[in-house]
Length: 246
Ligand code: HEC
Image 1: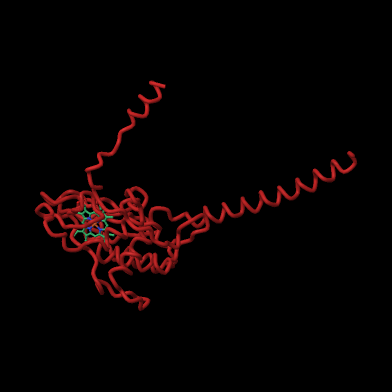
Image 2 (image 1 turned 90 degrees about the vertical axis):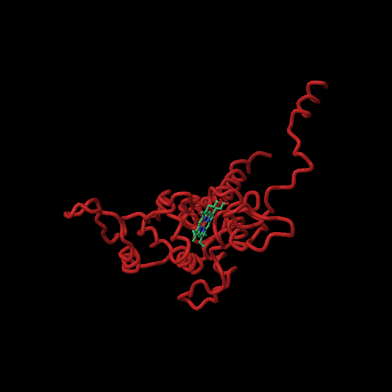
């Protein structure tokens, strides 16, 4: 008895007086949720546009190649055009200065100087290749964070250089609010509200973090159908085998 009690007392109790360090992100409905979830590719494409125009100024995606973008429904020419619009380092030129060349489908997304730690004193923005998978709270919290900026409540002042955000750790973050209404013009005519941009870029980040989700789900469904079929077959086989036993 004493041992059991000791075990339970040993379990750490959250100090009741400590407020949680950030608000809980509300659950959002995502196209990729659940075992049958599938990415809304139109949203993934809009989200890529948000990444390319806004987030990529500070965040890299070093584990993603331009060629991977084909998976969101682009053809080879569109992928080539996107790759070619990026310049990447290419050793040292004949003049001894660092040379640059246009990227190809095989190249990875470049990491901007701030994310390489080249800006003294700047907080380093995390790489976004797998962010939706590794960020505590996942897509729900990324969406909440992107839409969660606002004036701090009375009496609260974020530390210098940080912005108040109720979903950030300790409710303060070094990233300035990256989104705003009409911060981007969508090619498909969708109205670019802050919420829409946040939803699309979060969908893009979730897709980039697991581009094979749809394939895995399709395989899962096929395996389930096969197992159901096998079950029915075994059921009838058993009936037949035992039909003479009375
Ligand atoms: C001006 C530079 C800048 C831009 C533009 C920017 N970020 Fe950030 N971001 C940062 C920095 C710096 C951090 C690290 C913040 C910290 O640790 O306080 C960060 C952190 C994050 C985090 C992790 C937050 C956390 O709590 O650690 C997410 C998620 C994020 N950014 C998403 C985005 C998305 C999505 C976009 C594009 C819509 C974007 N960022 C655009 C600079 C930027």
